[in-house]
Image (tube, rainbow, N blue to C red):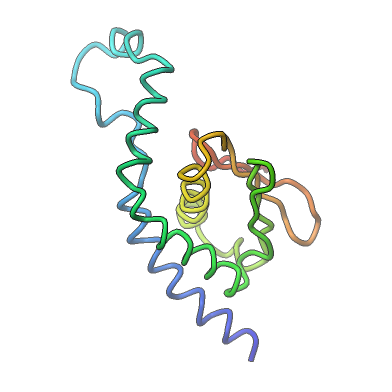
Length: 150
């Protein structure tokens, strides 16, 4: 019976991931105009990156309710056991069903969680991902996207 409950939550979460992931996918290069890449890189500073991130966060604040639903769905559906943000350092403990998702689906979920926390606390830099069974860190999600260990 417990497995049916997990499957029941997995299906809507995967559908939400697809819709939400497509709407919030980070586009680091699409906003720049065509031109010489070297010239464009030299003009795009860290301050520009910060300003772009701040703009994206402000434009997408209305997604906070949906992000919270995704977080709650992950907890209820057995994808994660804990998702917390103590002292501005968010982390997630993922469970076995999480590994059944594709890397794109995993990245979309982590993107939702990361944006949920960074929208409220700009000091958040990275979401750390731990394995529930081993307690080991298995990856991170931040501005560079999903980085999973081997």
